[in-house]
Amino acid sequence: MTTQELTPYTHQQLAAQPIGYWSGATYRAVVGRIREELATEFLTQPHWWILNHVATAPARWNRTELAAKLSAYDDLDIDFDDVFDDLLKRGWMTENTSATLTLTEEGEAGRLRARDRNARAHKQMHEGITEEEYVATLNVLRRMITNLGGDSDLPE
Image 1: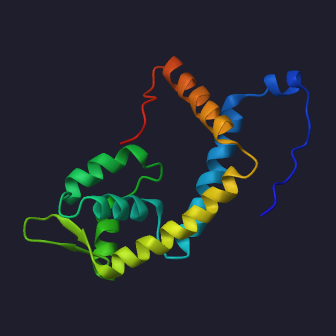
Image 2: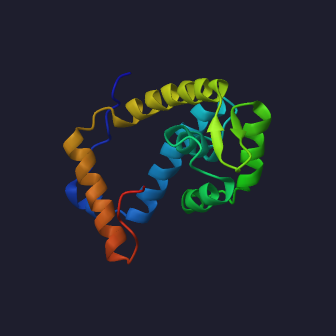
């Protein structure tokens, strides 16, 4: 992939831009690209979140605890029970007698395919951006969140 050139603007023009617009436009572009990649596996972001949490802690999560944790990231008003049911119906996950969740081999294979697709999307997003620039951008956004009384800590 080649890095596309940015249209040049003066410092003053850029400094006058509304952060709400640009953070929203960035969100829509980034999340749209990730959702596009997940859709190739017929997954949504909540599917992805569940698969990753269950993969990193097999038999740790039950539906209620995991849905409560993930609801903080939900901007789509997701019915997590529908997502759990879908993954169980696909055979990607099992729910044992104590109601904890574990990925199956098929579920782990699907998660890894989706991870590889998402890695390509992340690589594209980061083209032409140094690690220092990326970290500085996150710290600016974190400062704005803190200034507005929000939680700027890293997600768990």
